[in-house]
Length: 59
Image (cartoon, helix red, strand yellow):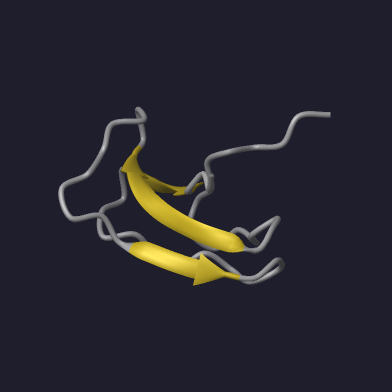
């Protein structure tokens, strides 16, 4: 089963990590907000309704 990689505000984080705001179409945002969340914490509101959260890939 595949895991979502885009999350809307209010959803619970599936894993610990750093998440960044992106545009709904996947485009990058100028000065995006970042959130460090633990598994089970809810995503905060985005600065714009057309944005979603995505996990930052770590090396």
